[in-house]
Length: 170
Image (cartoon, rainbow, N blue to C red; front, side, top):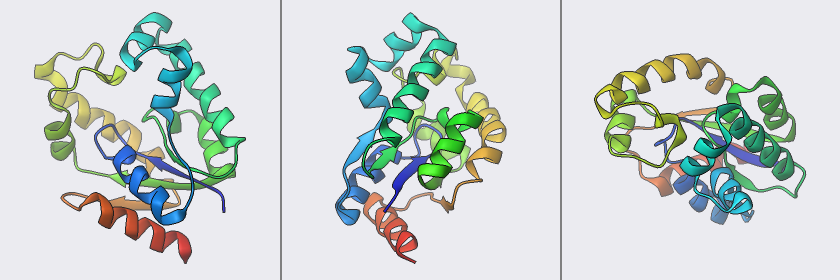
């Protein structure tokens, strides 16, 4: 078995799905963001503000390389990681990539009050919906290169985890 990388825009549920999927696959689960926070002793937003966008991206890439070298696991990948050609190549080489796709209006509903995610660091609340729509257009080309693409709207986390486990077994 290889790593199972869950990718998607913030709010898609990669962490919640990953926590259910690891039970089904009997693999450890890692949230790349949580592991980064633990390694740096700081929450994501504070780390992002302290390091700046570029250094934050490098720290995330380094954490991905570290995880990829470990035994197989289910990994919830930070939303920006697949945008790096080098990181995407590592994901594709070391595991199965699964894109959890959700529509922009659903993501906005889930993220409208979020204050923890670096992606929204400089986005005023009144501009968040348009920002999410624009970012999805920009990112979906890469996200859709995943081995498995699952469109989800109201599906429950256990059902999504079950579907992924079934797809991985075929």
